[in-house]
Image (tube, rainbow, N blue to C red; front, top):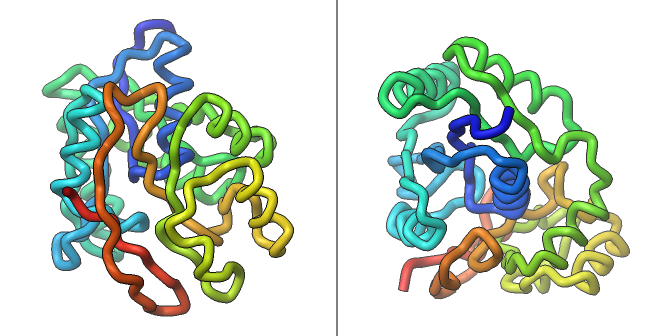
Length: 220
């Protein structure tokens, strides 16, 4: 798998960033950051990052951004597959890298999209210990700010906190998964070994929606 040309499923969060880092360290060659984008909301799906900030992230990493503008339902999977097929034809992509850890349904969905497009799927974090993965991210120097919390599982006081070992253990002590793999929280990574320079951003006002508390991150 050395020198395999890949695109990364990149939401802007910590697991995607660590998976990208591991793929590059193992000899994979990055072609693009692939981000699903909710055009009606003006934000990326799941992590809620606006497009101008995503482009700033892309510039700092030094890898082009590919936005998949898509809605909900069956169209989401079809749009993802179409993007993979296009990148295979136009850029010679051979694999897509994902940041999933151990939820089989997520693995199966991602793998099915790649199979449909004729690409390999790669999961650099798969079956890793969740605590060790969070610690690895921190120890490597990645900076991930908490931007979304499931209000039924975590207090809003975690919003805006950059994850440290201490913050991670406070999350676990609150009864949530330390890695947030079950959706307890989401992050935005703004610095670390994959970045040329830290990504400057500003914080918006907290929004409460559907049982989640959201701290918008905005381009400066």
